[in-house]
Image (tube, rainbow, N blue to C red; front, side):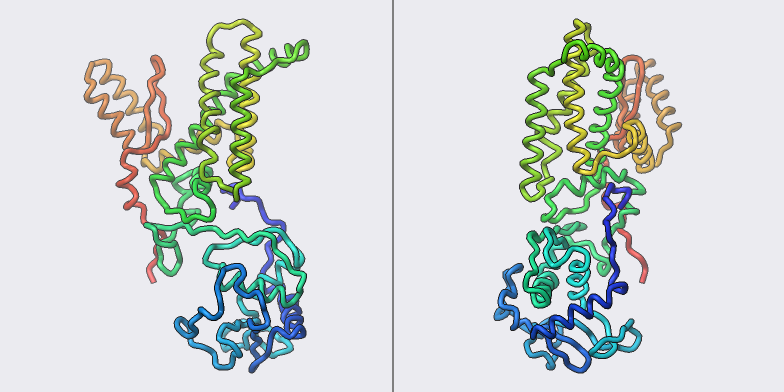
Length: 419
C-alpha cells in the first residue's frame, strides 16, 4: 500500500479485538425487538426492518430461498441472517449471553464502524458484490441498534478482472500487487487503476500497464526537463520579480484555468478519474514542452522571465493534480525516471551494458551505411520496450510500449498455486 502511495488508515481494527462492542450491539438489537435467539444462535428479523432493500433495490418477495444455501427451518423468515453463531468444533469462539460462539459476518462491520466513526458518518466503501446482502444487512442491523444511524454515501468499486472474469483466490486467476510491482513501477499500477471509473470493472491488461508506465514516464520526463531549464533562470527571475512583478502569458493562464476546471469538474462527478490525465492535463504537458523550446531561443530578458514564470505556474498546476491523485512522490523526478527505466530493463531482460552495446553496434552500422542492420537493432529493442532516440550526435534510450506487448500478455501467468 505504501508503494502505491496509499495513505495509512488512522485505525485498522480487527474483529477479535472488538468482541465486546459486537456483543453490546447485538444485545441492543435484541432489546429493541429486532432479533431473536435459537439454540445459541442470534438471528436478525428482517420483518422488523421496514426499509430493508433500500440500498440494493432488492425486495424480499422476489427472493427464492433455498436455491444457493439450504434454508434454516429455525428462522422466522428465510431472509433472516445471523448476528451470532453458536460455537462449532474447531472454530474460534467467545463467551456471550447466548452461549459460546462467534460473530456473524455482517455485525462485525457495523460494530467497528460505530466504534470509530459513530453511528453517523459520510462514506462507506466496498466491492460492488457487497451491496447485497452484506451492506443491506449492515444498514438494517445498524438502524435496529440505533435508529439515528445514517451513512451519507455508499461507494462501491468494480472488480479488476482477468480476461473479463473477476479475479479471485478460488479461481486462481489473480495477481498480487507484489507480483506486478516486481515488473512495473507502483506509480504505473496506480495510474492504470485510476484509468477507469472506480465503479466500473477494470480488465487486467499488460498492454494497458505498459501504456500507463509510458504515460508516467512522459509526465516525469516533462517535469524534469522543466525543472532543469528553470533552475538556470530561477535566481535571476526572483531578483527581477522583486523589482517588478512578472506576469504569465495568456496561453499559460488559459492552460491553468482549463486544467483546474476540468480536474475539479470530473472529480466532483463521483470521482471520475477515468479521463483526468487526458484532455487539458495533456495540453498542459504539451505547453511545457513547447515553451521549453521557446526558452532556448534567444530572447529579451523580460520575455525570458515571462516564459519562466508561465512555466513555473503551469508546472505547479500539474503537480497539484498529481499530488491529489497520489501520483507525486517525495523522490526527485530523476529518481523516479531511473526507477521506471530499471523496471523496463527487467521486463526486457536486459542490462544497461546491453543497451550501450546495441547503441554502439547501431552507430557503427549507420557509419558503414548498413541502414537495414541499424533499423533492425532499433526495431528489436522497441519490441522489448526500449526506445532509442537520436539527439544530435548522441543516442539515448528510454522505456516505451513494446510492439510485442499484445503477445506478452499470455506469457505473464497469474499467481496460480498448486493445490
